[in-house]
Image (cartoon, rainbow, N blue to C red; front, side, top):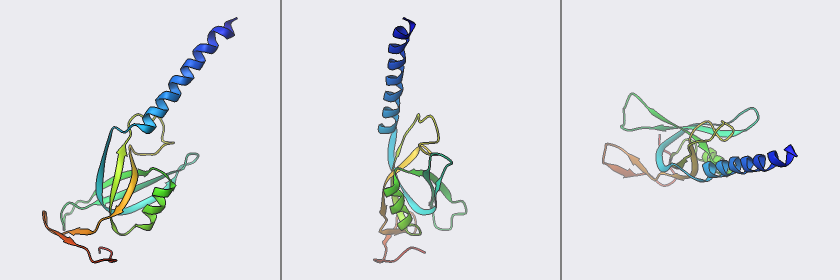
Amino acid sequence: MIFKRIMPAVLVLGLLVAAYFWLVLHWSYSSGERAGWIQKLSDKGWICKTWEGELALVSMPGAAQVEKFAFTAANDEVAAELVKLMGRRVSLHYEERVGLPTSCFGDTRHFVTKVTVSNELSGLPGILAPALPGSAPR
């Protein structure tokens, strides 16, 4: 008799938890682009393996302090593309996901969904010079 009362509550609770996970995995709090050089990418985790990386952002040439953008690759295809483009200036499209309860989904809130090669090198602020085709920035 008590089993018949508890079972619907457990089922409703399970559906609510599943709906929460679906919502936080498919809804993004914000999205944007960051440009720079991928300086680190690793597949890490004991049980849940995720691709974690760092993008070095340079605001001005000769700036002493380099800002770093920590990110998580959304899937293995994106991670493979990131590995191919290491050492080149890239632009990362990311979605920020808030409310993920564990690090099994990633160590950061910023999930990269697309990576493209940046074809311009910035010199001074406001001045852009096209990169030579096939050349990697130094």
